[in-house]
Image 1 (cartoon, rainbow, N blue to C red):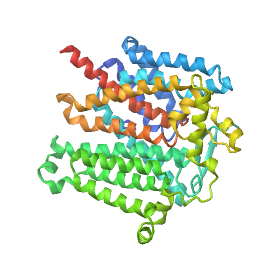
Image 2: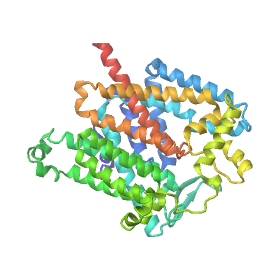
Image 3: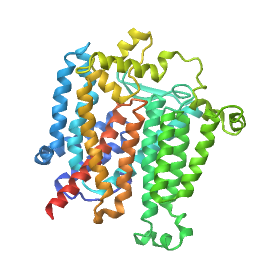
Image 4: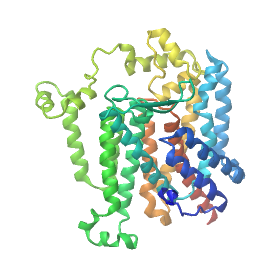
Length: 452
């Protein structure tokens, strides 16, 4: 019988804390199937969380950051009692509060750069069926749906032709969710490619590729990662998400600077200059460029692909209304999940959230709660950035994979400045996983310094 667990990267790796070996195995199994079957994957992910809390409770409680999250949770519950619909507001907090317990556990469970590489490999493996189903949905008209009884909750769902029609959505149900997921996966795959390039020849199997630069490009791992990046990039294009396009291109530019590959920086910058000029350059400069650049790109960038859109559907209108709500209730906000009904009463159009995570938080929970959560997350990223800039010598060959996790989380935040994906369980959990990974290594580095 084949050993399917061998598909999980680092399947034989031993956790530095033997008590956390079993939780780590459950976590890897869970995240391997999480994007495709989240309803099934939550069980091993939750088991890993519970076991970690049970076996490392004292260490978790020593993290002052977790006490900050607990205080924020109490405040958010308090202000939700003053919402226009307290029941909906408290229910909306489930998009945040359970992930605090997840963060507390997984930032202890994840302690080494080897675990980051394992998670990165799992991200890529689990994305393959998502991408293939997306192509089948878009080009072959695949469609199916499995719901929980008669509820709107779907265990599985493919929309023939995509959703909206013509935009790849795969199992995420809507193109925006898939776009954010693929952006995250693309950045991680790009980081793995750079990590593999930098560490070529570090073992006997790859030594010949290191000695002969021409053979480097024949490395099976680099070929796999290059092919994955190509396919993932094509899928990203077909989500037709400007935010995801921008995030993917920005990650390429950042890694080009990181590697000092200025030829790549110049090439990508020149290509983007042509595309943006075809969209925004004044006449008669843009006409010849539009003859070269496919309409799919410049029309989407300028929003000419969807003309005559009502003003209420534009992001600027939603931003202004969300800020108006914030000004009217700056301390308590109007409650989670309140924006949709308030905006519908104002404009006659239902929009579930204002397409900006900061405005969503401030209009829902007030300015103090928004500042508090931004400060907590910002502190983790600041400490993570400091660690990256002064990376321990004994971790030096893993600096790139750590940087990749920082960049992937940064991409998630930037995406949520124009498209809020917080209500999607998979995207929200994966973002907290990235943040947990960053803080886990920050904490371990501080421990190692304290022991010297």
